[in-house]
Length: 109
Image (tube, rainbow, N blue to C red):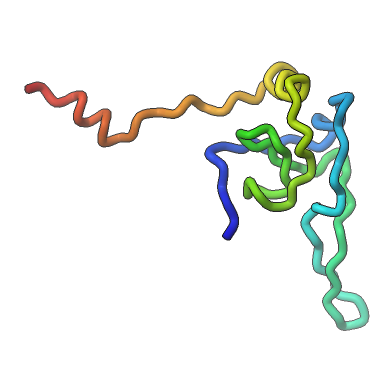
């Protein structure tokens, strides 16, 4: 079963490619289905600068919203995290208390 992270954000590939240590695991790109000679074929798609990839809350990059599928970049270093926060302005929202906890704290005893 696919796993969703708590937060991810889509960026153009050209933004990721600005990082000096960027490398792509192209074998993990989502497959495209195409019809050839009446048969459906799956091929690895070409990744262009204007395509989107997803930066996950654990700082990996995926070709889709799922945390554990189609991982394109997983070389998470302090330099990468700094690039993401400073250059890409990536900032997952802080965890908020559950709605029920807010309601309880608002009750006057």
